[in-house]
Length: 64
Image 1 (cartoon, one colour):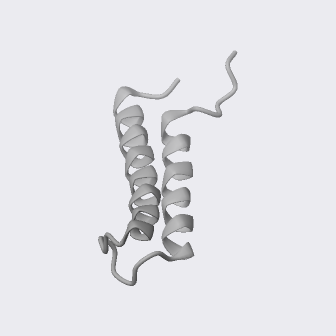
Image 2 (cartoon, rainbow, N blue to C red):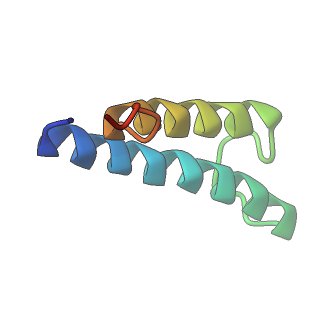
């Protein structure tokens, strides 16, 4: 059982991580929103942030 503030932090991190991935792919449409343009590093950074957020939410905790 996670406290409510853990879930808020977790879902915020998931949204930020997925936002980074989406903005990274928007660079294919000539929208230069991230420094350096489209880069695999942004994809992995966004994924890492989203996975860290899933721990905060307790998405993978065992249910008793």
